[in-house]
Image (cartoon, rainbow, N blue to C red; front, side, top):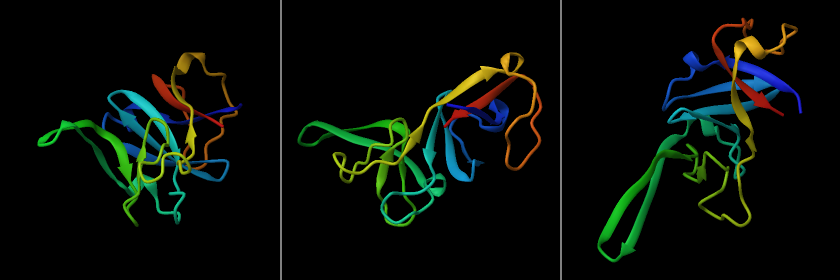
Length: 137
């Protein structure tokens, strides 16, 4: 797989997300507690932008009347019809056995270890500075 620099870690702070395009594919990059994850920016239901979806968590219950909110900010809800997906895996919470959002491996690499040009970037020039977010396709 080729690696593509898609931005600096400074551009995607904790709890945020950004939309990038790699080889014509829209990919939503999420920063969850310092870990980076990539999802194809199309809900598999009808194509809504997952990058524009609300971030939420899960409600768990061990017994009736006892509830807890867990994994806050790790679930994205499609803005069109409310389908929910695990940002870490792409797994659907509507039909987990059959439906999932396509996920991509994302890593953070020290800019000094990236080979100098030519970089592949769709919208902005890329500089080697500090740490970068790298998407593998």
